[in-house]
Image (tube, rainbow, N blue to C red; front, top):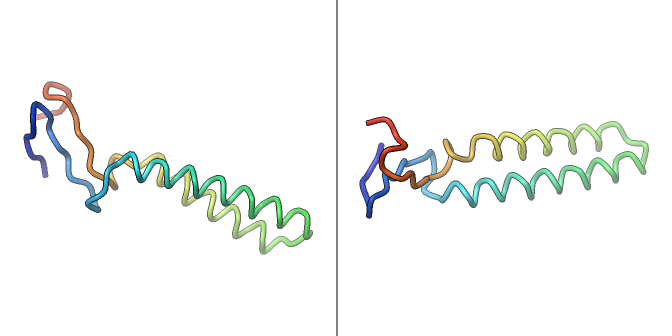
Length: 81
């Protein structure tokens, strides 16, 4: 779904939040996952490291697909009509 607003085409994502917020949330998840990984390595605990890796992948997916998940403004002429 798209809407026109002040010379921009607004692409509606899966949730009604800006794609920038989703992108930043992805980086926060990635950093949190790295912290969990570090704790797991220090504890010599494979399950904790596995949870950290899973959190890392969630952060990577949020970062890569932030434009699909959140709303984004695209200047007219850059989107397919």
